[in-house]
Image (cartoon, rainbow, N blue to C red; front, side, top):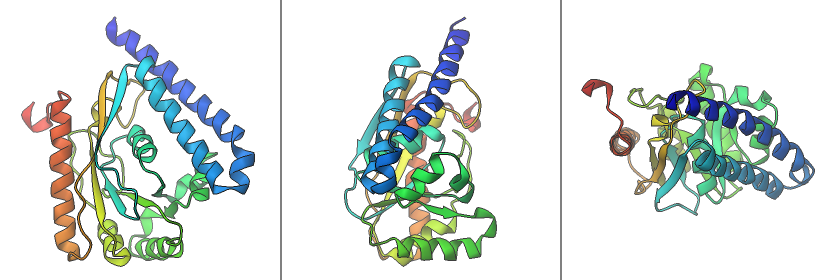
Length: 246
């Protein structure tokens, strides 16, 4: 019975989350159309609404740990669900994402993403996509902020392992900026697919920055080791039992 009630709460929450997206997206559109500040205000309002409503509607609280960067850095994050996107963006003063090119055509999401300087990437083109990504990022470098990339290139379910993509290393090398790794346990409560959302404490942790100037291979190894170890720790703290321990 408890599961059924939580599933119903999750269903209502998911429905209202999309309703809020439409209301906020359309309501802020006149301001966002003429000002990037309007776009940031709209996205931050939506993130706050989802985080707040998740807390009381489905019992999913959030916590942000670590030192949040306010300078121009590369933010390389673990990505487990839609929820970690919102928590990370809400925490940063001026975030923008490397995002899938298909999202450009998503109503509201695509338009607002482009307005704040997100960089669309066609993941299927590999080498060409990386070159275009670097060029697009550099062309928008005059816009101060934190560039967020999900280093595994996609959402990864809690307990699953996927390789880290070289695109993060290329950006680190070309931009010559520090990198702030980010770990999370969000996938324990909010899975990649399905309706059910579990109650608990979803944590996003900003880890000590990796200084610029490392060789790409060294950087990638340190990034993966740091983020995976911290994410495993956060998931264990949330009571998650890894598949190898089941």
